[in-house]
Image 1 (cartoon, protein in one colour):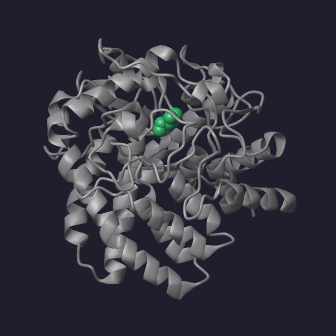
Image 2 (cartoon, protein in one colour; image 1 turned 120 degrees about the vertical axis):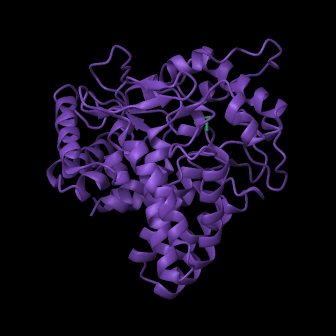
Image 3 (tube, protein in one colour; image 1 turned 90 degrees about the vertical axis):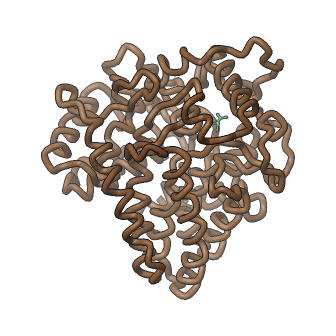
Length: 420
Ligand code: DGY
């Protein structure tokens, strides 16, 4: 195992661009929001100063309204599309994308603080990050849940983290392809076999959504009623619920006094997440906010209410049963789509492959509900995939083959955080 730890560490060092870590060279040459969170957990295992720096650098891209964008374009790089020119956001220095991503950061800051060897450094850094985290979470509530439903509106499949998940098929199909869509050349398929990436029809709509944002001046409240793609994503809602619990703990610890405000958010999000439960399926489903109905496709995020901590023990047991039934159909947990679904594609990005980061989040949830055996199974499967196929972006749930980008930062980071 030691040589793998060494290798994982070397991947983070090789992907370090001076204060930020690229997910992988070429395919993703900038800093991504939730990647940075996981990567910081990895850095924490061998260079705590550098781990905190990862998050500080990410927050350089925070918008004045509190939004934390999903990509910060710290320096120009032609190997990725769409770059800053295509996003055309009002954020100039550093330029950024105009949407967010699963907000893991408050939870990870708390975890970093509690696990730090250098306690004084951790106290100083976490305390300094707190107001930025609070501004980000306040932005979520204000911009994405103005009606106080308890669920956040997401405006792009990229925002959910699970870009081409079959959960978004119908909602995305409703997005009209812009007849004046400026021509573009995908870069991703020059780095990775196209059979492992989203399809062209999806890209046309991903890019058409950017034209909508630009036309609407990135006004979140306008988009709340006008955006042609609006979903409630378990990845965002469960991660945010958990992050709010952790932000509240940080507020209390540092004496910032925001506990009542955050408790108010949590009292709305817990029942709203639980209303996504489907008794017959034994799973939680994402929700289409335009059609106003559940999206009945089981996905790995369907288990995340365990990570949120909103489930009852009975529902947690039922989820564990569902996960065991998935385990009968694949060799490695957790496939990103229910393997019995006709939409399951075991090698295409978020339509079937296993992702180490999702395993990590789901296992945290399982542990907290006392499902330790299943949590350990997820850990063992993740380590086995790395041993068999290296530090890939994602893995085939039946063969264990490594897919997508290689020498991947967040997979290396999860390994460092989880291996011992
Ligand atoms: C991509 O380009 O594939 C990313 O997931 C978007 O953030």
